[in-house]
Length: 301
Image 1 (cartoon, one colour):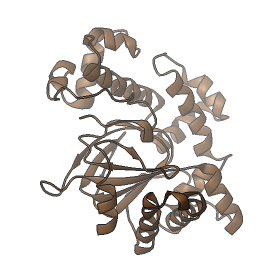
Image 2 (cartoon, helix red, strand yellow; image 1 turned 90 degrees about the vertical axis):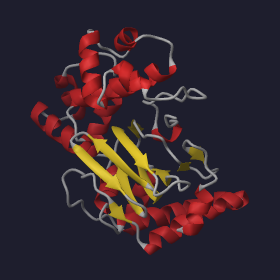
Image 3 (tube, one colour; image 1 turned 60 degrees about the vertical axis):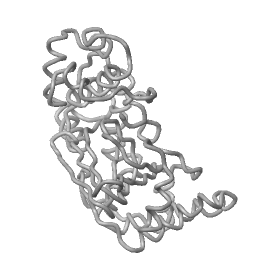
Image 4 (cartoon, one colour; image 1 turned 90 degrees about the horizontal axis):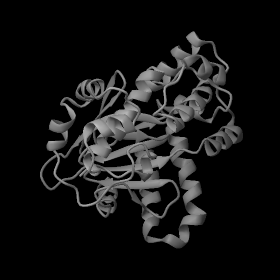
């Protein structure tokens, strides 16, 4: 773990590419309000509290979690002590890779109908695989040959653990998670527009009641709550980094009433827009949209 931390200390104060496909690292986030794409997240130092719908999760060093679909989440990180920043690694999950592993080694049926958001402790074998992966940063000529094998080992270790069932569901092309993912993609592409649930349920091949049930089980939110979080996360980004007033931004993300926007914003972030944004210092540079994929997003300074 000490060697892993020393490697990740090279990261910037944002998610930083490593030169290894699908692997990113971060040092000292200020906060973590963003859309998390399907990924494995491994905390090395510090802690993170993450609110996903009705769930509040806390991650300590040497713990990991799996995100099965694009999830808008509100989070806060903290360091263990001054001069000891938050450090973490991420591996973007590729369903085809997981599916090929299951085909090669025998597909074990899923024991859960829908995934749960849980925090798990990394085993020594998982930590060792991550260390060998991160050592490749200093050996770029070895990445093409070795990184795919180590990636499969990392996924294998997770498949053996308490979150293995979630990985199996991610790889299942005809499962409920895959069906809900189609609706999520539709909402994300049109998050500023009103929608009716019936066409989304039809898109997934489910009844309205079944669609509601599975969507909330997978995202911890209803479809409307999911859209609302997308809107408010993007509104906060615009308030921080664009020279427009709150009413204009409210309309741009799909709200028809600035007063409703202000109420829902305060409910989500704890303060109305102007007072919330006043807490942040003016950042040096403008980040990518908060509704962008996890590995492409920059953290709020």
